[in-house]
Image (cartoon, rainbow, N blue to C red; front, side, top):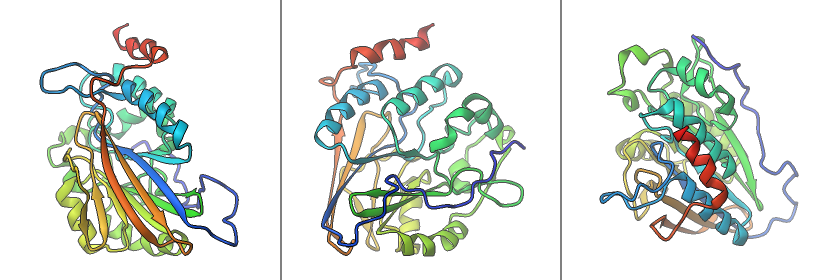
Length: 295
């Protein structure tokens, strides 16, 4: 089997400067997506009137003008299952243009197997956050977690899937090993809780799997879901953990706005979905990028 070099679980801060001695109240904005399914642009279909990754570029450019300091995450399911070799590089190019801080990985990405994913997209793995995929010695293949500093708040982000994520997976593609989410969290959560104010899981375990995870592991603060492609217009709260998910096809962006007090405790939590309807268009400079798939 072909694996990336194992990365030690070191603390990686978005802002390398130390937190100030006198902390202030902080507002953290997390934007997220899940299960874009390889959708590059609005197809203007009767049953799907929302935009894709290209329209998302335009929205995020506008959003960042008002809120430049955001955390942008994707839980996985961005490749889709059709024309992956042709569309995949464009998907990653658009995600890089949008400057995602990190993205997970799931069954769509691994549908052809880990070796195929690496042969096609190995150059794009630097932002993958996932603790579930392990090598023959049980060591993580990708970075297990990252710690980002937004304002005065430290946010720990890890990524998970389970064996159930691959229930309908082709046997010929199973060239990788999956670590149990419970084993991973039992190992990671104590250190993350000591180091962070807020813990986020990028999940490709589906809504029911996320609920079960939150019930068992109350130290998780937020689960950004995926895999089941559930449209959650309101966050689900389980044992103090919020669970969010933005449906399918990439036509919605989730926005989580959290207000923290000086001690790093949550004072206020707000969640909404931003629908990229037909009023959102592709920026002119993105049209040539999307049209590469036609060549």
